[in-house]
Length: 68
Image (cartoon, rainbow, N blue to C red; front, side, top):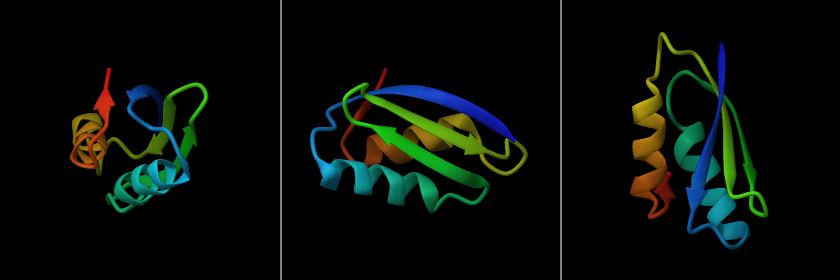
């Protein structure tokens, strides 16, 4: 398992948190998703053999947020 912290812009409320958690959590190979609104970060624990970091970033961006 790998753990990565991504800086994400555009999140401002609990709806944003749920949208990101649901989108990333739905990916096969993602074990855990933690969203920190104040810090503007998303921490993802995932199996790199099943899901790529770019797929995680794409899932966040598809919800309308910018991954820096």
